[in-house]
Length: 108
Image (spheres, rainbow, N blue to C red):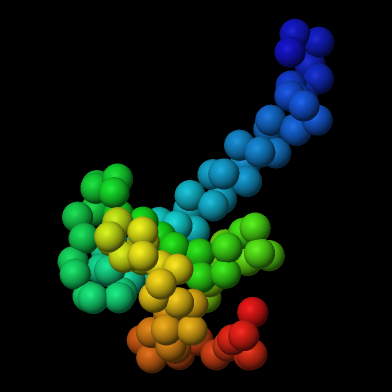
């Protein structure tokens, strides 16, 4: 805005939103590097620039999950589409096996 105020739309601080998305993007890239651009479900190597390859939130943001690396797993599009059928318990076991993440109760 010309008067120096932060632009906002429907009560959302646009500057804060862009910063949050930028940080989330960095963490997603970190998860891809950590997983060596590999679908961690069936160990298929992914192409770095392929937009159809996803980083999945084991516990969704809507259910209170965050962008912590222990809550992210790299999946190909097919596995991401079937993530609900595969289940968060298995994803957590995969991350525990490869990276030593320790999870509490996995019934959430």
